[in-house]
Amino acid sequence: MKKRKWSIFFLIVAIIASCAFFVYYKYIHITKHPESVFNNDNKNNISNSEQALSKSKIYIAFLGLDKDDERVHTIGNFRTDTIMIFSIDFNGKVVKVLSIPRDTYVDIPGFHKDKINAAYVYGGMGEKGYALSLKTISDFLGINVPYYISIDMQTIPDIVDAIGGVPLDVEVNMHSHGANLDKGYQILDGQKAYQYVRWRYDPMGDINRVKRQQKFIIAFASQLKSKAKDVSTYINLYNTFKGKLYTNLNYEQILALIYFVKDVSPDSIEKFTVPGDFYDLNGISYWKPDIEKLNEVLQEFTK
Image (cartoon, rainbow, N blue to C red; front, side):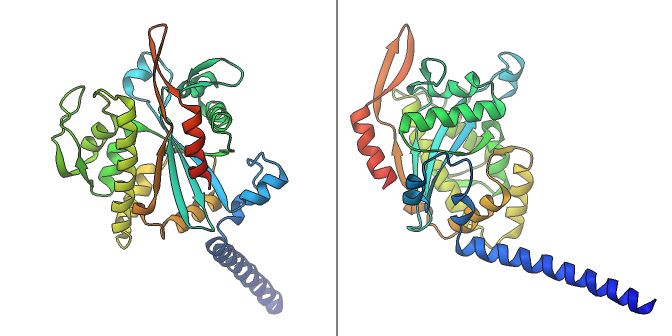
């Protein structure tokens, strides 16, 4: 009877040890080869030859929803008002970001031409909305963008407060449409950061807002990196994001990205924006992309 008990004990120990070794091996493999958790992902709907050429590089869309209490109770639908495509080059250890203005006039597959931020609504919001947004973005840029990370923009105050604010040089006075920001270097708390990334009431409207959002992302990443040894900051950030972050990335892919970006200097991130001009059609303002200039931008963005 005692032998049987010991046998069961050793079996349990062996199982636990095997699981621990597997988890450790998986972690080591991910940290050494972060690209490996993306290469065989069925979201990469590209040919084998294309995959062979781009297996060390992936594209991820950051989609900020204009969801707020007013829209919930009145319209009931939300758009992807912030669209940024991140190029992650694992081999070159390079990160680039391409912003697509929300009013960009594009073909929405299965529908018609409209503002690119409307694709999420045409898709029916939720998972189907994200799927159509990725399809629209991929077709427009001519590159495969299979992944997304999305948040409700109204969660920005909590996210910024979780890391103790973001130091940033505000370019102009912003004292209209709910914003109350003075020009100059300052530490933005959550509410001020939300005002900064949402304000678009100057002659260039959303185009200058896109530039500010890129600037804010870099400043946020720098502030987060400066807190690398402060475990409580990351715990606060995790608790803030919990249940408020939407993505089709799995746990291993998120772990791989976190491990990869921790060694990337925020100041080295290259920034691009879809070039174009304001375009009025039937009284509605759009951003009409300059395809020739866009192709030049994409050459730099994808190389």
